Image (cartoon, rainbow, N blue to C red; front, side):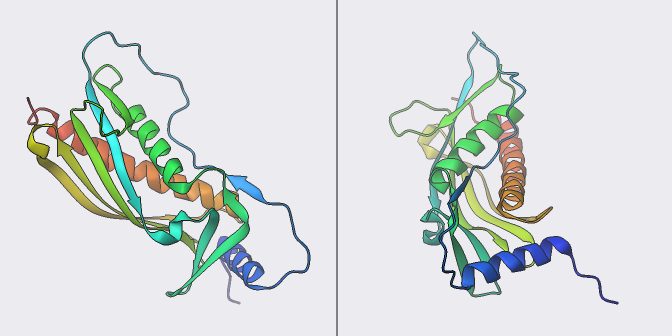
Length: 204
């Protein structure tokens, strides 16, 4: 007897429900990405801290819509009309990356903020997200290229072309949002590692 993975079947059912025309209009549900922050270990830190700016952040066009996307096969994207992000996904990404990287780095040494062109920063992380969705196979895929840029003459300190996959643990869109949050946590750890590694060499 062949066993079928239940999370995969759950995602396939979601895809089929979105593809099928439905006479009734269910209420929309809204979701948010979660960060590693939450234990409140932030410091008031009176000493000087390195300021890290997260941004600018670019995304593939298909990610700009409010409906959560599931990839069905290689070439089909199914966007839910009734399961949506509570804020633009670009804002969610920026918020979670800022909170994650601040949570990973020492509060006494670093201050992590959304990047603003007018702000004075020591390093900034520029990102381009080309894939960020669940698949009908029950996996979330995140692909992002990123650059860590220093203050002096916009020196390139580090870069990465990162692909992270994470299984969806359960059925439904909440499980998808949780898996997407876990991929962002892993991306944040990799970027934070490079911020720490290059801190001693990026002097000014």
